[in-house]
Length: 273
Image (cartoon, rainbow, N blue to C red; front, side, top):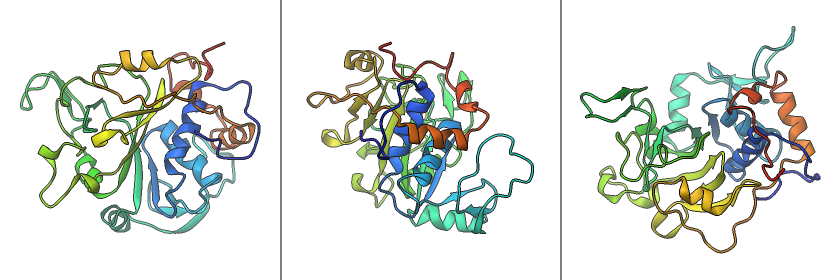
């Protein structure tokens, strides 16, 4: 993982800030697509990408406006005026979705070896699950229409499950579940950002592959906390530390430090210390 801006690495940073910078890399080569980060850290990741190395990204105010600058999160100072570029209501959002001009970073509750994801229900039967969650929401249409990345704040075997997801809410690299007329090449799952590492689906036959481990995390920790095989190809690098320039942008985007509340106890990004 390379640093997105030309600046020296910061000496102190939180795990949330490390994950924001690692998540921004998912949008590096996207060009002009609608970037959607579901949740604070994914939203800040997409915003950081737009503010640094991919100014062509499109961002909305989550209502009906396309922005030329991402909005900061939390309460805004008096007199703040968001930088509206043009109107973008529901119909235009779906035009982007169906034309593959969108990249969403989402937070699945379960992920399986195929990259299939679940946000719907856990355990029991489909008719009577043990835990009822959101339902599939937009996952089916999103997963067959445009690129998706995953954000997982707690990397463990309850998320990265041994078998198939309890409910398959989004399409992955499972040939038995492909929609009619689709091939595996039509599925586009990019990065997986967790509190332990960065992964992608570029292993043999679209298997999950380890890209980097966060400072202080071993390859063995990643494998022990994943319920299926992860491809480890050669020496695995350490996830690049945020640069001071990146941290400065993050503080502008999150002036109230809401990111500090996203991970339990707000751990440091470098756990070798």
